[in-house]
Image (cartoon, rainbow, N blue to C red):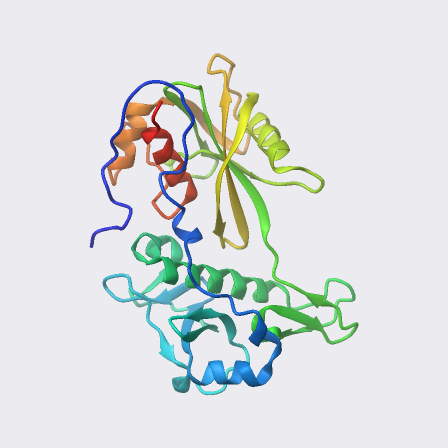
Length: 313
């Protein structure tokens, strides 16, 4: 197979000018119509189901896929009446749905989004992202946050209603910043989180706290995780990340490489300033380069690093 993101990295060396993502993050490119209106119209939803296509997703977020990575879709008629189905949207004139299925312990055709992401087209990547995130929310929202009574799914999977106080809950998205910190020239700050394999490195990330701006989160998280101060914070792009329900908001910022790095105990195992030439090589290779393996093409971190390597000054 040839990955849709597997193209060689090349570009001018030197300098520290602005950069952008090299392309939109894979999971942000979906052309699927979300189709809000049928969620409150039982007759319209029933018609969409009758001619729909359905994705099966197990409790580990895996779904069947063919050898080329294409998702396997079932005709809704094969599944009968499924009140637990969630409406993902409409694509190519057909409603797309997802249902939870028991976890599968065997079968190589069952793969998750991390394994499939690089091989999926924009529409299927978006549909699987929505399915994984939405079904995971349902698994965790079975009881009312107000009174504790059981809830039921409504609006074709886009809300849950309490059977006691009738309070409605909607799918949650947790915003998280992810920031590529560079020195304004040819070095980028990479870190390995505690518990990661010894060669796995990425840019810094962290969840936004209550009452905090995204830029404030960038400053706080970088300071907390590696002990340096950043300036010139700049927005790059965003990507849904349904593990289980994050929205990764990407930024770039500058820091002084002479400021001592102080990895947060228990959170960051190690952090290093890495030259662009090594990052370029690590992006081109499938395996580690000089002890560094970078994030896969499905992640916004990969797109950020590629954009930084390819920047024109």
